[in-house]
Amino acid sequence: MDKAGNILGGILARHNIRKIGELANIAAEWGAICGDAVAGHCAPADLRDGVLSIVVDSPAWMQQLSFLKAELLDRLRPHGIEDVRFTRGKLPGASGTSRRKSAGRRRTVKPEDAEFIEECGSAVDDDRLRNKLAVLMRAFFSTARK
Image (cartoon, rainbow, N blue to C red):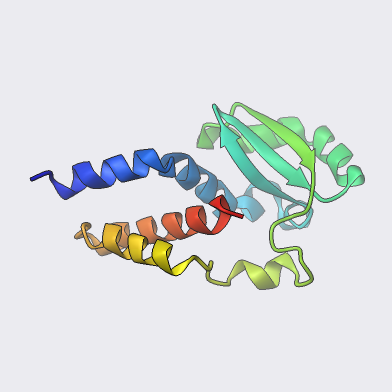
């Protein structure tokens, strides 16, 4: 019988949870990283090979962020970010309610994904680790299939 850690490790690797975890950590600290005023107009969107893609809500803010790129990179380097790319697009949660109001809401996942998350968590004895895993997996499953 395999150890729960080996099984869980395989599941996490298969669903690329490590990348999602790193991106979730950056997203959780986004306001502190770039300041609340800037964070209201951009959001981390993807992370690949040390390059963070940032979605920006307007051309004016994209230009402003290009001027702030060096400073932003200095703040992101402790997270393993080597470069950033800006893309124009719709911010997560910008569908009529403000991002601040929607930021504290629990992510919704499909019932079968919620069951899978619960099953994975049952193999982890440490409460803090189990809760962090659940948050990361909810983030993954709520964004991966849109």
